[in-house]
Image 1 (cartoon, rainbow, N blue to C red):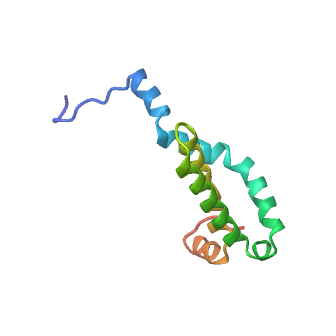
Image 2: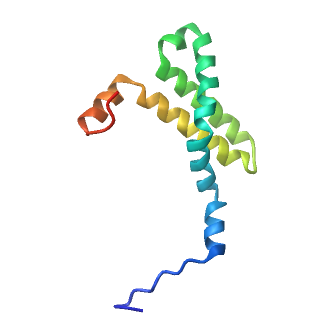
Length: 111
């Protein structure tokens, strides 16, 4: 102990339980599975005339639908679906002109 600060210790069992946590599963599914699901969600949105013209609203509705399904299931599927729902929502928000302008003003990604 130096200056009253404990030395951090990393144990394999703690790390594996961290990797198996619902939060990590949700983040991993948002990063790894959402790009695959986006093609399906986009195809469904393009079939509805109103949503075809309002992509962000369609993504919001798609995200809410996935979130509702996640609230009805349990086990490993719940964090996976929650992560996918969050990923779809972020794509919908990022696609809006307002969000793009805000990101550009803040120094974010410009498309």
